Amino acid sequence: MPQAESDAYHLGPGDQVRIITLSENRLTGEFRVNDSDAVALPLLRTIQATGLTTAELERTIGADLVKAQLIRDPSVSVEVLAYRPIFALGEVNRPGQYAYQPGMIVVTAVAAAGASPIAPSRIARPSCAVSTAARSRAGRSGKHMSSRVT
Image (cartoon, rainbow, N blue to C red):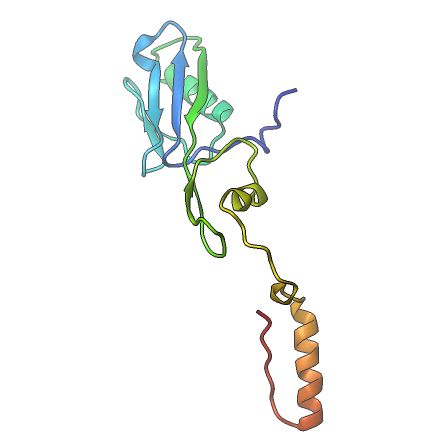
């Protein structure tokens, strides 16, 4: 079953893609999404790729080939060869750069970085409960009080 496009991976700077254009070797190869959010293709302009799925990039390249009158009915395929890295910082045992894997979520990224167990006293309470308690204490003493949950 194909992945829904809204759930699909969106390209960003640092991703490396393979673009295959059937019967057109000059437009087939490995390309990297650059820091300007684009992929530079020979014979075509620079194409904005950041935020697009591979299917959207395929359609964009195909439309540009037709518009430039280079290919009448292009067949373009795009696949991700290497994903841009992710970074885990903060209260983890091994902060740093990690390779992204398709389907990775925050929990799995933090687990890969060796998350420290969270003590019950470190779990944040809802802010409304803190502000309500602060107001009731201020009302009894007549002084302004603030409290912070860490």
